[in-house]
Amino acid sequence: MFELIGIPPQALFGQLLLGLINGAFYAMLSLGLAVIFGMLNVINFTHGAQYMMGAFAAWLLLGLLDIPFWASLVLAPIIVGLFGVLLERLLLKRIYHLDHLYGFLLTFGLALVIEGLFQWRWGSSGAPYPSPIPGGYNLGFMFLPTYRGFVVLAALVICLATWYGIERTRLGAYLRAATENPTLVRAFGINVPRLITLTYGLGVGLAALAGVLAAPIQQVSPLMGTNLVLVVFAVVVIGGMGSIMGSIVTGFGLGLIEGLTKVFYPPASNTIIFVVMALVLLVKPAGLFGQTK
Amino acid sequence: MSSDRRLLVTLVVAAVALAAPWIFYPIFLMKALCLALFACAFNLLLGYAGLMSFGHAMFLGLAGYFYGHVVKAWDLSPEIGLLAGVAGAAVLGLVTGALAIRRQGIYFAMITLAFAQMVFFFCVQAPFTGGEDGLQGIPRKALLGGLIPTRDDHVLYYIVLAIFLFGFGTIYRIIHSPFGQVLKAIRDNEQRAISLGYEADRYKLLAFVLSAALAGLAGATKAMVLQFATLTDVSAGMSGEVVLMALVGGLGTIVGPVVGAFIIVTMQNYLAFAGEFVLVIQGAIFVVIVLAFRKGVVGELAEWWKRRRPAATTPKPAE
Image (cartoon, rainbow over all chains, first blue to last red; front, side, top):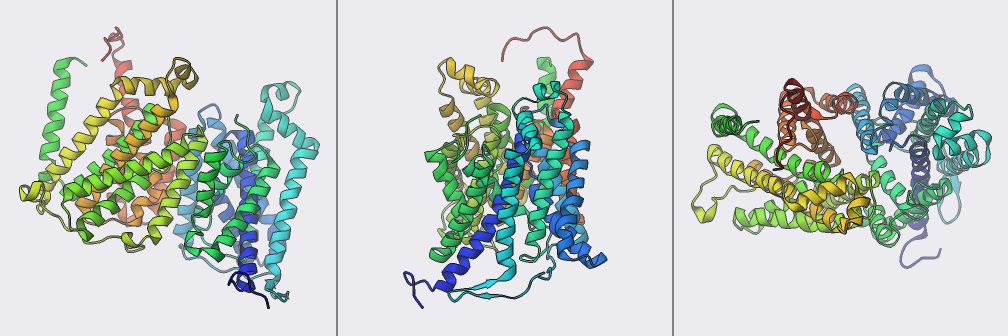
C-alpha cells in the first residue's frame, strides 16, 4: 500500500467520498434555492426544514405503512412538494411585492415553526433509517459502501436532470422567460402565478428528495437541516445564483474541499467553506458564476 | 407632541426605570436592558442604513467571552473587560463588514449569517471559551477601582441602566447627526447618494462597525450581569431573536427595539415551561408580523396616533 504525505489512503479516500456525498447535498439544495430565488425572488430559509421533512416523510412511510425506500424516493418529495405548494398559495404569494428581506424573514419564521413542531412531537435526538442497499465493495484502496456510491450517482443524475429540465425543455424555457420578464410572458397567455407555484413546489420537492437520500446516511432528526441550510447559503454566495451548472459545480467542489480539510487540518473542517466564501468575496464579489443583477 | 407632553412622558419613563428593580426581579430587568441595547444596535444598521445583518449574535457572544476572559482568567477590572468586549466586537465588525458590504440586499444577510456561523464554530473549538460548557463563574468585581460594589443586584441594575442609556444616547446622536442623514439617504437611494459624491461603502462600513461595537457593549454587559458566557449568545438562534425583537417593536423607530426586546424577553420568561414550543411561537410571530404588522408595535401605535389627530399635520421644523 502506498502512503500520501503521511496520510493513509483509506483515510484520504474515505474523506473524499464523504466530501463528495456532502457536496452532492450542497449541490441539490443550492440548486433548489437558486431555482426558487430566480422565480419567486425569495431566499427560501425553509429549505433546510423541507429537507428534514423529506427524510421524516420517508421514515414515517416506512414505520407506519411499511412503504419501502424506493417508493418513498418518489412519494416523499411529492408529499412535501404539495406542502410547499400550500405554503406558497397561502403565505408566500402575499409578500412578492415587498423587499427580499421579508421573504427571508417569513421563511425563517416558517422554518422555526416546522422544526419546533417536529422537535415537540419527535424529540431532537433522531432515529436511524435502515440502509436500503447494505454491504459494499472493497476497492483495494478503500471500502465503498454501496449505498453511498448510489447517493453520489443519484445526486449527479438529479442535478443534471434539473439542469436539462430548465435549460432544454419548453417548460424550462417558460420558467426562464418568466424570471426575466413576468409581465410579458403573462401577456403571451401563460399563467405565471401558476408557474411560480409550480416552481416553488418543485424546489421544495428537490429539497425533500435530498432529505430522503440523506435519511439512511444520517440520523433522521428535526434539526438535521438547520445547520446544513446555513452552509448552503455560503455555497450559494460562493457560486452565485446566476447559473444552474454553477450551483452544481460549486456544491460538489466545496464538498470535496471540505473532505480534504478533514484529512489535512481537521479543526478547520467546520469553517473552511466560510473561509472560502470570504476569499471569493475578496477576489470576485459577485460569486464564481454570478452576474451582478 | 408638544414639549410639555414630551417632558411628562420622559419623567414617567424615568420614574418607571428608577423604581423598576424594587418591583420586578432585577436580573430579569438587566438581561432585558442588555438585549434591548443589542436590538437597538441591530436596528441602527437595518432601520437606518438598510443593511440587514443576520449574524449579529457573533458580536454579542464574542464580546461576552472577551469580557469573561479578561475579568476571570486575566483578573483585570470590569471596565477593562467591557472595553475589551467592545473593541473585540468592533474589530470583528470591521473585518466581516468590509467583506459583507461587497454584496447587497439579501446576499448581505446570507454573508453575515455565514460569518456568524464561522465565529460560532470558532467559539466551540477555541480554548478560552470553554467550548460546550461556556465560561462560568465570572466574578463580579467592584467598579471604579472599588468605589462601586456590584454584588448587590439593585446597585448593579443602576449601572446597567447607565450603560444602556449611554448606548441608547449614542445611537440617538448617530441617527440625528449629519452622518445619520447620509446613512438614511443611502438606505433610500444608494445610487443617488453616490452620485451626490458620498462614498456609500465607507458610510456603510462605519455604520456596521458602530453597530457591532454597541452590540459588543451589550454582550459584555450581559456577561457582567449573568456571570457567564455561553454558546447560546453566538448561535444563529440569537441572531434570529434580535431580528425578531427589532421587528416586533418596529424597524426604523428609535424606541421600537427596546419595546420589542422587553416583549420577547418577557414572553420567553413566562413560556420557559413550554420548551421547544417557544420556537414555534417565535416562528409564528415572525410569520404574523411579516404578513400583517410590518411596522411593529411602536410603528403601528405612531400610525394610529397620527390618524387620531389629523389636525396636527402642519410641517414640523426639522429636528
